[in-house]
Length: 190
Image (cartoon, rainbow, N blue to C red; front, side, top):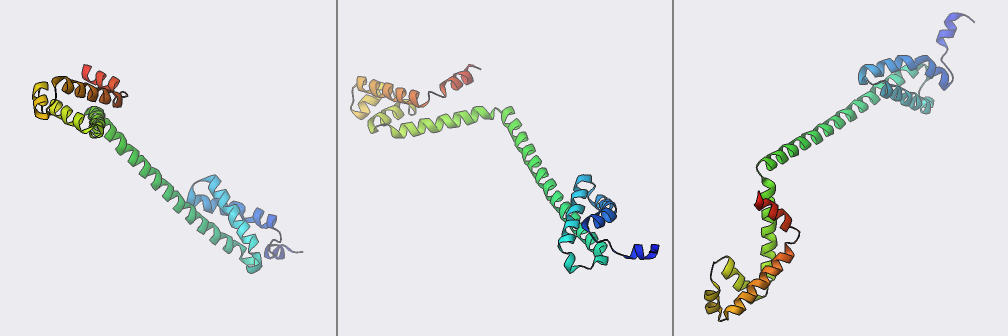
């Protein structure tokens, strides 16, 4: 058997084709993806694809088929890498913006404002839950700055009843705000 017939005869088994062309195609894949492990995976997948479809492909066209498969898989890998990089960049960008906002909030004492807004919402909710007379008396005293005597005359109550309604309202608010009292004390002491 002469040397020319040896080069013309195509490899018969998967191992032969793989051994003959693997290094060449890994080099091509590396030039695209610049990641050794990814290049080797791409080439292996391309060889497997060729071998699974070898009945439809003439053996002498194996290098062209494998080259096309490697190129297409490299393009797919690069596109997936681009999408992953974009997602990482978006996450990084979002994290960066949130961090900047948190810093700005801390520097502007924003947590105190948020705490006060929460407390205000709880007080408002609890006032709306109070019985009608208690609510009217409490609002007149706290928000309209009326004295016990003025409230008693306005609502035809004794000053003792006014005092009772205000004390009970304060107790309800104290219970509703029990988790916030330590923070409020700390806030007002500084």
